[in-house]
Length: 354
Figure 1 (cartoon, rainbow, N blue to C red):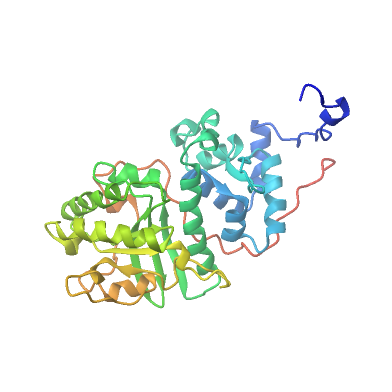
Figure 2: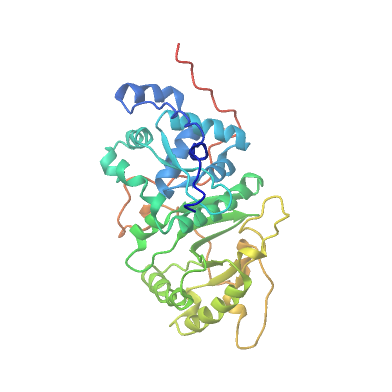
């Protein structure tokens, strides 16, 4: 109000913090990184290149024994210009730090693969584009989905995640027919299932989601490979609406059995469980919504194979060689499971006096 002006001292904010000192991406610095970076650090670099952005919580759940150890190591990687970070605005609370690949990290990755940084498709002036992208929440959501799956595998010696392809890699290989949000392989109790993931964030028109089944049917016909499609939705109500439209589109396919579909809702996860994840018994095959009105119970992902006896087990490595007609990526996809030394304490940065 003009009759009640703000006093000058109320305009004083907190004292500006000093910027964290960072190393320049020089040839000398890259030489120093040769003995500073652990196998886990190099794995994080590849994961950031593959999936564009990972939050501090996701990186910690994927490969560190505690959030504190993860935070300390990520701070060191940031100081060494191996990773960059940003913190998006949210209206309530504080968003976690989001990490992307920095120039020194890209140089390390390119050198390991015998490539130039440009051949990786990396440009430092574009990596922060994800921070302003309208698909940031969706990308982080997909990565959170797989993070929960990998975290479950880290705590279960009988479970592994054999593949986690990003949306960009799927588009390079299958983009002429389908553009899934991810591709993965999941093994537990000796049973392995490969799948495409459609991650619904509650904003896409469900009729458009159902219309994607024709593309998956075309891919199955072209390759002769039947790959299940897992559709993840936010609520049970939205799942019920999606299932009706999906079932209608599925029944109209020339060969519905070539596109096995299962759905699940995020709200079905037990919030009190130690490690809630998509590996829980929350999946319902689309075939259960049949003309007979039969309903099968919710299943774990690997138990879906009992409902799809026509699907042979995967026998080929998840590798671009499996798709010779596809555009081969310049760098191989990183293994979703972290290296075996992830439970070791991260080495501390040497002092400046050494």
